[in-house]
Image 1 (cartoon, rainbow, N blue to C red):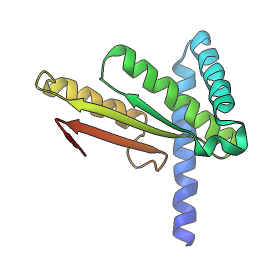
Image 2 (image 1 turned 120 degrees about the vertical axis):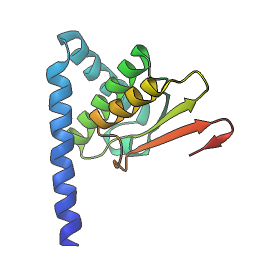
Image 3 (image 1 turned 90 degrees about the horizontal axis):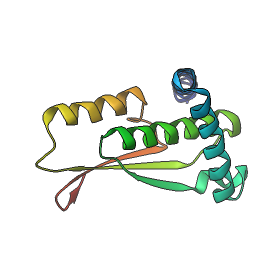
Image 4 (image 1 turned 60 degrees about the vertical axis):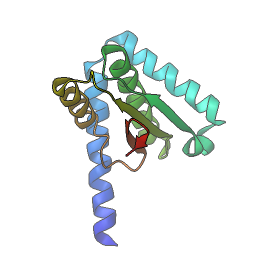
Length: 134
């Protein structure tokens, strides 16, 4: 039990560092967008006490626009977790298709790593390959 609490504290610190790094790299308008998005998500959830029940799905294609959307959602998710102690669940679905090059797949993986999505229980990563979801 002690190790679980210690691990949770360490991961909380990692998530705060990711949030701080994201916010530091954002322009003032992007930081304002994160604040606005956070407020909208709180409204959609029905307040701080219900935000943990909110679930979002993002179809992630790996392009510039979807990477920007994922980055803003992740910043909002981490921002809520830091302030409210709880946050929404994020499901990220990526479709594997014949046109997806190894370089594009590598970029998707790198984005997931930078945003520390893998291993976060608040994030579910889905790879859709034809009719299979893994």
